[in-house]
Amino acid sequence: MGLLYIITGGSGSGKSAYAEGLAGETADRLGAGRRFYLATMRPWDGECETRIRRHRQMRQGKGFETVEHYGRLSQLPPFPADSLVLLECLTNLLSNLFYDPSIRREELADLVTEDVLRLKRQVRALVVVTNEIFSDGTVYDPETERFRQIAGRVHARLGAEADRVTEVVYGVAVPVLERENREGGRGRG
Image (cartoon, helix red, strand yellow):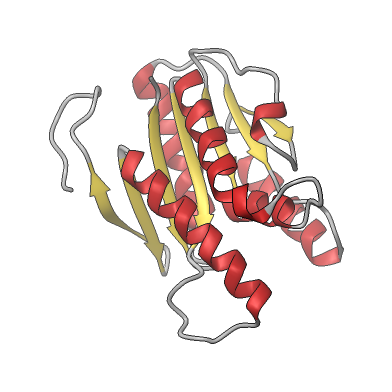
């Protein structure tokens, strides 16, 4: 069973740069084989295309093979067992699936959670980047609230399975949870 690291933070917090660094360090430490960057943002508009270009530049030269995928993770061919996968980002993936008419929203949290945990079991390490969308205190329209509820359930369930959860705030990585794991050593949690 692979390691699961979850990196969260607000937009522009530095979570992607932190996750890429952590993925590289983890792959080196574990002797992981190939490094995959699982990109989930659909290029809907100019803003998305700009973000995608920026992320491609950030990971240039870091040894990642990019796999662009916007649907169910269970539809991907298996990754090699000794590989490390950086999933960027869970919130984008949830958004893609939230608007997929073939998926019932009542099932979405379970489907995504199971897909991520299946991927975790398949590889040596899985680093998941997600957005912190819960602490702004804003009241949203019912559809956005439904999305936030689904995302909250997925985050809570994956957090319960994670070896490490880190929140990036103002570019600073703040450990939220570190469990004792197969790497040895004890963590906070």
